[in-house]
Image (cartoon, rainbow, N blue to C red; front, side, top):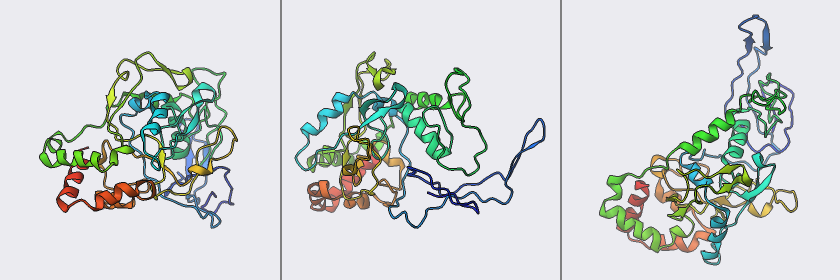
Length: 336
C-alpha cells in the first residue's frame, strides 16, 4: 500500500488493509507551549491502493459482543468439530500465535480468517490496523500519514517495556470490555412464533448447522487458556453458548483470495486458506443488513444463495424448499 495526499509513495510491507477515508488535522499546537508540533496544512491524508495490487476486497467489521465466551472455547472443542462434519464440508483449523504468551500457538477463532486466538492479540491488531495506534505487540507503523507520535514510548505501568503509542495499555482495557459483554440476545417474540420454530427445524434438516453450529460449550472456570496468559473466569466457564458458527475456515465460493494466516511450520502465508473464510457467527445477525464478509448482500435470501462449493448440497436443498419454507427459515434467521 502507498501513502497518498501529495506525499512520496511509501510501500508498506505486509499491509492488508487501508482506510477508506482519513483526515489529517493539518496543524497541531501544543496547548501549553503553543509550539507547532505538527504542520502539514496542505496534506490530504488519504491512503491509496497502487495499481499493482490486484487482489482487493471490502471487509465488514465483525461483531464484538459475546466474544469472551468464544475466547473461552477450548482448543480441543474446536479441533473435534471437523470429525463430525461430512466429507467435503470439514472446516479447516488455524493455529496462530498468542501475542501475550510469547507467541504460544492456539486455535484461531477471531477475524474473518480466524487469524487471532485471543482477544488481547485481536485488540492489539485492531488498534494498529483500524486506528493506526502502535502498541506493545505491534510497534511498526502501517502508514506514515499523520504520524507524529513516537513509537518508542515506554509503558506507564512498566517502563522496561515499549508500548508505542499505547503507553497506558488501552488494548488491555478493550480486551476486558469485550470479555465483559453479553452474548447477542434473540428476538424472543419472533423466536416464539410457529414460523421461526419451523425455520429452526429446516435450518437443521437441510444442513445449515453443519458449519453454523447452534451450540458450543466453553471450558470450565479456572482453565488456563491463551498459552497460560488468561484464566477462564466463573462467568464465562462451562457455559452453553449459541453462536451459530464452528469458527473454522470453509470454502463457500465467496473467498477473497487473501491469505492472512502464517503456517507455523514454514513461516510463510498459508495459501491453502486464501479462498476460505471463517464461518460467520449468526448470533446478532438480525441487527445486520449488509451481509457476508464484504457486505455485498442485502437480503437473507441473497446471502444464502451466494454460498457454493462446500455448501452446494445445502444450497440445493434450500432451493428445493417451498416459498413458505424459505420464509420460515428467514424468520428464524431474523430471530437470531
